Image 1 (cartoon, rainbow, N blue to C red):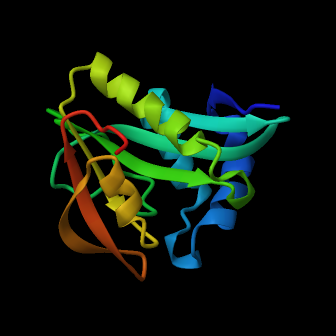
Image 2 (image 1 turned 180 degrees about the vertical axis):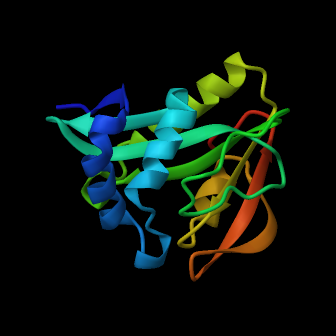
Image 3 (image 1 turned 120 degrees about the vertical axis):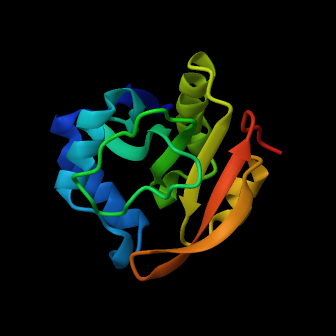
Length: 164
């Protein structure tokens, strides 16, 4: 049975938190208020992949300013004015479901939104040694950063992300 991509809402918060715990180290976990803030400030950028009503993957993205890292575990941030990129704040895939193109399907939602709203740049903070994965999408390392207690890398893709 194939997975189904759906918009995430506030009622999905427990499923989101459970999947987050499965996929991220403890220092990268965000609380429920953070996810609710993401859903409320930009509902068009919150998608989940479901299999038999179980959340097995998600993505959170929104318009943002290039070269500005989105804060981790902060439920008070707002979208800035004059945004110039799509920021991929969070993408998580259940370990048992990897290699099924789910990440591609979820990321495609961000690309479709960016294309339809004329965004030319995409940005993210790569964590848990995921830089190589994002480089395959055309992202380039900009600088080292810290998210939680982990080292991370701020990355930018200029132009449309394309899997290589």
